Length: 365
Image 1 (cartoon, helix red, strand yellow):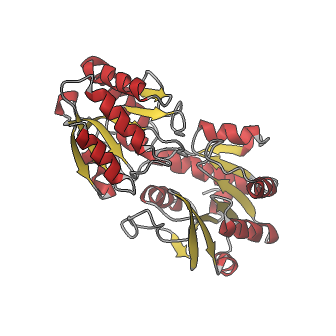
Image 2 (image 1 turned 120 degrees about the vertical axis):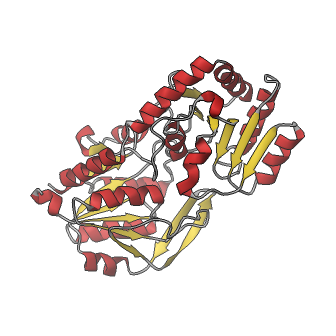
Image 3 (image 1 turned 180 degrees about the horizontal axis):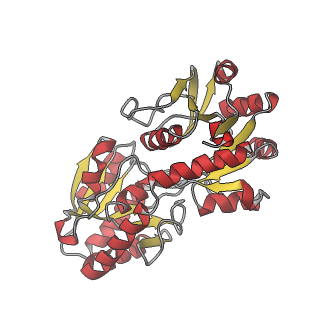
């Protein structure tokens, strides 16, 4: 093990998720890693204590403020005392919220290496005056920026960060898809929605419009809706009013999501703002092509228009037509499915852990 790999790293994050815990477990096999979380679980999640942790994990006392349907800010106590106890050589923060800034300030005062790890890009990053000031302050003292895709890299390049100081660590689901995904005729549902059912960010009303438009193009169609949310009744009501054959599953344990995607032909993700969209990885590793909006981080990165799915502007009739074109042509769907499966499986958990470890080593040199 190299000298830099023996240096300890503390990741300061909002919360640990099943997919980040998988990554941290792999990283912890090669270096001393600890994780400090602002909360064990944010209000819109339900996976706490559902996965194993092979690294030291500290959840700080504090409170959270909901800034939007999927955004929370945290303010915690005992940040300095916890970092003093852990005494890491490298501190990695994943945002610029109050607790993250305190951790960054601790690293600066203690002369520790500071890394900024984020899934954000130009469309999802806040751009308030306070964020711009904090961003400039942190970036001037950051030795490495870690992003999950090409949009994140371009965002920091545009801010003047040197390409050599930006590392891409791809997001990888907490579970693996099948080695051989089910064929077209083995799949029960034409479309699948998977996520919070709300309009402000996830754009559930748009999904309803796509389904209504697609119903006019197909003699039969089936839809699977997985999730709950404040606009759930509205979405399900519209599907019912349009006489669309749908199944609603309010919640599925993350370990069982493979069975969900293996029954679907197309994922529809029309989000108005999505840092990445891990649901795309999950669907594609099960051979499900994705239709995504241009506001999804995975668009034009993991999802390549016309190759393994479609990246589309937000016009429901266009989405319905594209979906119908794929569903009506079994050979085209099969080609998309194979490429989707290959693209998702090319981004392995082992590669992600190696990339993250390399970024920490470069940041600690």
